[in-house]
Amino acid sequence: MATVEAIMDIPMEHEQNVLGQLDMNIKKIERSFNVTIIDRNGVLKIIGDEADTDKAKNVIKKLLQLSQRGNTITEQNVDYAISLSFTEKVRVNDIVEIDKDILARTALGKPVKPKTIGQKDYVDAIRENMITFGIGPAGTGKTYLAMAMAITAFRQQEVQRIILTRPAIEAGEKLGFLPGDLQSKVDPYMRPVYDALYSIMGAEQYQSNSEKGLIEVAPLAYMRGRTLDNSYIILDEAQNTTPAQMKMFLTRIGFGSKVVVTGDLTQKDLEEGKKSGLEDAMRVLKNVEGIEFIELTSADVVRHPLVQRIVNAYEKDEEKRARRARQHEMSPKNYGEHRNESRHRD
Image (cartoon, rainbow, N blue to C red; front, side, top):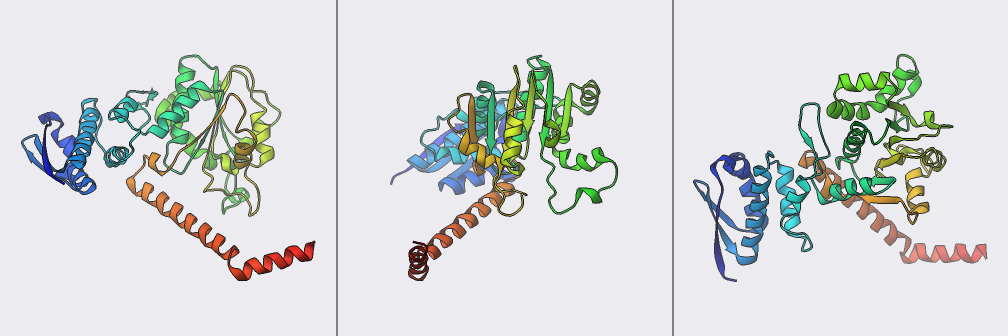
């Protein structure tokens, strides 16, 4: 194929942000699209196959638009913009449209917003449905985005209180060995929820609202027997619920309430062989009107890029083991034993 050249201007005030430290972002784009990019005082010359050159130019254009909107370009931004370029359905400006959706601001004034298409679908589902399930691996922003939506609804007086809960599952250590009273024993299990609250709302505002009973952080067991009206309720780590606990929780919901359930099916701490309430809910409630299930993937991980690679490695390993298990079951020896067992039962 013929080699083409594309010229692109990067304003001086955005040059370092877009190109990256020591041109790190540009080098990644070069490797991804097999192009050569030459920078001469903010004028980029992109050389390569026509299709690859267009993709590289579009990625740089997205990064420039993000920079012009006041964002610091991160490695995650670059990786995601590159991955979107290989998806034919995605419009050029999708990543910029996502960036416009500001959900809340942290206590330090930093905007909280979705960073991937999956996250955008998730927050849109929360807006449109009474109950939303956010299911996906670590680092996809399930809890943090739900918390931002809850705090915004609370500040705008759409709900009267926020209730945050998660099952207090013992993962290695026994609750009884932790020091202090019951609340002290439970607090370590709720720490991720507190961290998100402090980040977005601020410790003082949280403390004030908590003392008034407007924000409640409690283990799932404390929900039994209650009816929760005019509340924004978040159930975190739902993969560690039992089917009975999940049913109990979902039937607590009253008028004027909104519910977000988050979980990661790959990180269950339940006893071996025990069914997850999250898995059960996905089966039972999949066709119920007013409930939506959003499944996030490793592409939606917004923590350090290494987290995304770790998630991908585990997913590949699980697929490999599942494939080996299927091959083992279908091997001539096992298949014959399976048939003999079936005849014996008959």
